[in-house]
Image (cartoon, rainbow, N blue to C red; front, top):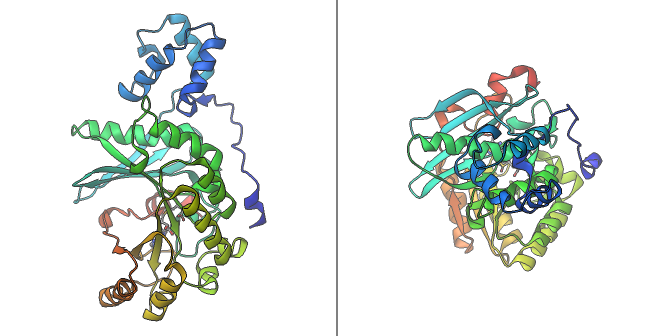
Length: 362
Ligand code: SAH
């Protein structure tokens, strides 16, 4: 896990940088360098994020010269739809192909309070969580910020067809967002920017498996974004069995960083806790979990395990899930059980890609 402390560089394929990776302020500076007035940044952002064109040529209020400069400097990332599945509950799941042939998943979940998009941050993952399909085959490469933004845009295009809006974003797809931190942050800023996708910080959620140094960094960014941690275990012994990342940053270190985050931001965190039959789902585990987090400003989201063909964990029976929840409630811990969506379309992280792209995930 030592290598996690270094950054993975995006291999240079000669591809131009995505225009969706460019921050608003940065675009203003670029325009000034080109001898253009900086208000053109507002016009360009409108074409990108409100009108959602997919060709610089369509930006009709820009000069031909500027359109040419843009197309020589940046690419308007498009994601090729390999499959688009619709679940009976309205969930839409995309398998997209990137310019270099790799594939990623994006899921649009429909709720009565709005539509949320679950985005992927890496092609594969190197964390090796023993229950997760996303890590089968390891990490192929990091996504560029613009490739993450493009997933939200493509989801919005699908929602345009039914006159609906994407109102929230969750960074819970394939990959470890904090293992691609330098692309994650510009993505979050563009999604949140009022001239970008204009999705409020409180409608954006980032989830990490526990890359501790980045938790400190994220706390210092002071973004008002929702923060979730995939805890999954009440003790460091159990956590190490489920998540190799715990060997690099053991539970006590993780908890220290979370305390720092809460202190620094004043925000409540969410602990995701997957119930894995016979491993971490007994009432004694619930008691241990309550001991661990009792004085923290937090919320626990219990996740009934999704069965993954390549992994052999079993689901916790319903009664036992409720018994686990009851222990936490008794101990005055805020707790909910995750509602499941998209069961009929392999909507759990990495499942669709693992099925459709066997060569990438072995
Ligand atoms: N790498 C980040 C982002 C992924 S979020 C993280 O680990 O937080 C996806 C969530 O689904 C994580 O909490 C992950 O642990 C959980 N998950 C993965 N595979 C699962 C499975 N088979 N059943 C239930 N939850 C799973």
